[in-house]
Image 1: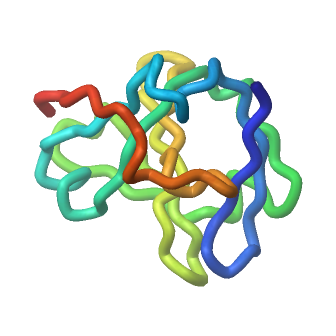
Image 2 (image 1 turned 60 degrees about the horizontal axis):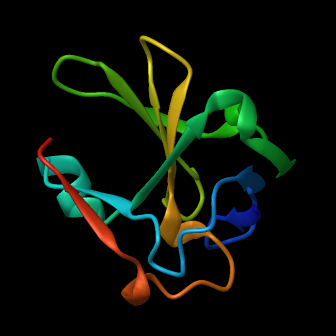
Length: 115
């Protein structure tokens, strides 16, 4: 299924293909690390090439790394929404499922990740 999403202010819009997860068959990643917990993000995973920009580009996003710098988080510099994380050792990305259009995160099946 092709999902569309973006930040709060609308400066960044994207599409991302993923198996349907809103029916509870597949879970979203709910990481307990200090950063993800504070951000309240819920992850669905794919590759960096799957993420297609309809408005804005990755070069315009604010990038944040900490600790061992294994991941980079990308934020809208205007409204601050965390759109995705990139595992720098490979092409894997986690897209913040809370940024996808028309979905209710309360209904998502959660898979807890010990980050």
